[in-house]
Image (cartoon, rainbow, N blue to C red; front, side, top):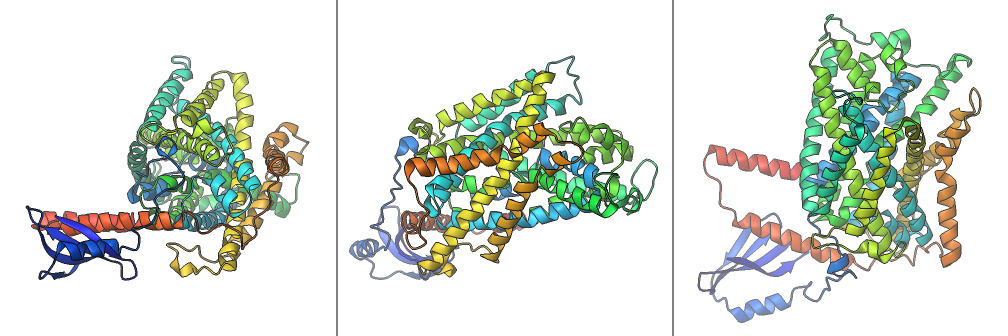
Length: 602
């Protein structure tokens, strides 16, 4: 039996003692944090000397208290592989698979690719900023980060803006699930409310029990989504090369005719029309990336965030390049922006038929593929609904923990699930039944239009919070080389992304002024801005809050607790690795090597 007796954090070694069956100490061994046995001392070892070593542990006097008790504490049961897979496949959903069709129809393939790439750069900087804060001291959500590093009023505003967003998104995903199933079963035969009810019950049960169940399910769903996207990339590439019923090699044909860029209106000059179209599809790019900040939410329930979050952030970059840039490039080669199927969905923007990927599959003439692809979309939508409900409940919990919502919302069950917050989140999912009525569906679509502006405001808040955090770190002389993860190109990346997001937030619905004023789209497109401003200044006036001075920002409390949790986790992993038997046989060795490889990348 091997147990730790002393930690050398500078040399990253663990001094251990090994006992025989009678409990007698035989030797002392030194194990590094990768589980490698460094050396062994077998002579003149006494229990007293070991006890002295144990008492010298530099972490022995550290309090593990985070100010919470068992009734309001989340369980840190998400492993590195869970968070990594959630980071890769977490936000892949209808925004990419369906929303891309709207962008392609408005601006053409080249403009869509450029717009999504520009937003992708901003998303990476935003995620890396969030990752640096989350690995330094993991907190319970964006509310807590903003309140601690910037201004409690900003924490209040972003918390409630995010709450609105995630009260709308889960019912939207449930509605999308019903639309997907209508591809096989007509709504006249079975009411869509039946499918909404089934999916809602399933995701509620998943979120009601141990968060590890949520993490495990999302791990496999994300893995499946990754395989689907890779398969889709291969399929689109094959269709472009002539793998279709007519054996036509498409190449860049559609970039020549009808063209790579499309004018927003025939009443504009070609150059102005193409520029307006490009700016208009930036918001579609934002919608496609919404939810990518999920990694920052799950950090609060990660067993070792300083290991898992940096990996997740790095994988985010690969996801942007592979699953967004490459797929959008290929679908633009396979579907022209004037395809009749795209034009026919002009009044059905939320319809599954609006997906350019499905249109590419249908145009290929391979009969069975549309049904397979529709099944894949159903998996994407189910995963999105599941994760959106999770985020909704955790955001309410974060507001309660930060004393910005009723205290009862912070109560957790024995699994560490904030059940009151989950119950309220589930109740808002009932809005999905509005889509059963055609009149109510129009009203619900207005709600969905609010989501994009709230998403941008969330990114703006994250970037402002990071800028304040970065200034505080520099002002207090803290060396970033000691950080588990450091965001690249800072603070310039944060300032660039902040400026970009502010511009997009202000111009996101400028097209309502073209061809007559559309007041309905104007109100729903910008309503989030005054709500956010009122929340910020209202809280500031009532509670008399101030923006924290860089020298006064709290960068100390809870850090030692997090340091100890990290070391405890490393000790456990090191001892487990050290006690593993050496694999024998080709199959066992191969299996062990594959496991080590997956552990490194995930």
